[in-house]
Structures are given as structure tokens and as C-alpha cells.
Length: 190
Image (cartoon, rainbow, N blue to C red; front, side, top):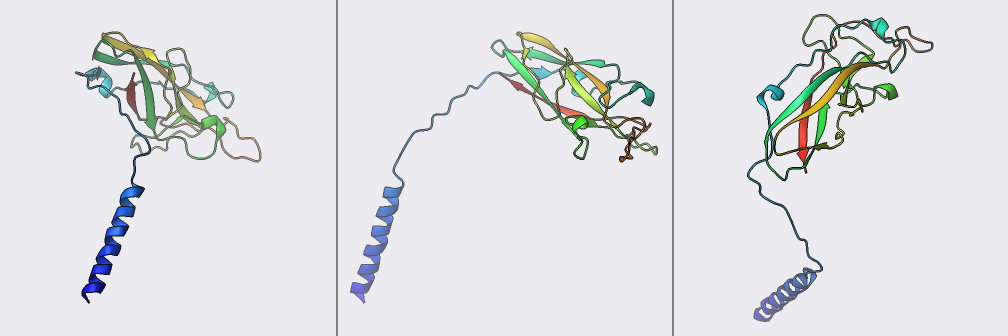
């Protein structure tokens, strides 16, 4: 019985030794980074802003992909430390559902709680100051930052993805109604 217990103990010790050998170091991982005093802060007026896109006639969209006049807006950053050189902004929110190529990357419109049904066939396109589209979930091009305050300029507009008059066999058409949207933004600093 003692011999049997000794044998079991020897087997357990041998398995433990093999496990140690299997955990030998094969490489190294180095982690780098920096702890900074702070990054830029989003100015209070930019934390929860409203960008009026106006009232637009559905006839202002003569074809799929047509856009309304742009509305410009700015995300103001404050107290950016020296050495924070660049920023990219990513917008997120509800996207237009379905597999509609012309609607890709557009923010879905809603009726903001109104009893009237939301407009159909349009979405909100967000772009940088030069009009380059920033699809939802994608980062903008880089904005160069200076120490102190910085203003990141953007624009938004309605873009149609359904025609005003449907073409057979589809019955999808642009319709009038409230066309509000809500997007969140996040900023990645470099």
C-alpha cells in the first residue's frame, strides 16, 4: 500500500515536471506607452449639440445619391497638451438597415418621438470640412492639432437612397416626414 502511494506520488511529480518544461519562454512581449497629464477635452458646447439640416422638399432629390445643402458644424477641443499632434473622429449611430448600396455609411433618420412617420429613402451623411464622406463607424482623416484649443470642422447633409418616384419592379420611394438623427462621436489622439 505504501509502495502504491509512493508510485502515485512519483507519477504526479513527473507530470508536474513535464508541465514546467512545456511552459518554457519562447519569446518576449514589450509593452510601450506613456501616461500623460491629460488629453484634449471636448468643449461643453460640443458635448451635446444640435445641427439644423432644415426643411428640404423631397423634390430636391432628383436622383438616388442626390444631397441637400450642407450644414456645417464644429467639434471644439480645449486644453490640448503639446505633443498631441493629430486626432481622428469616428461617428457612430443607427445606420440605414438593409443591403442598400446607396445608403451605405449613412445615419438612419427617425421621427424623434413624433406621431408622424419618419421620412423614408434618405439618410444623413457626415463629412469632413472638405466634403469627404465619413461613413458611420469609420475614422475621419487626421486633423492636425496645436497646443491649446482646436476646432474640428465637419458638415452634414441629407442624401437620398430611394427615388422620389419608384421604378419597377421596386416600390421603394422617398417619402416626406421628420428626418432627425442622432450620432455619437469618439476621438482618437495620436
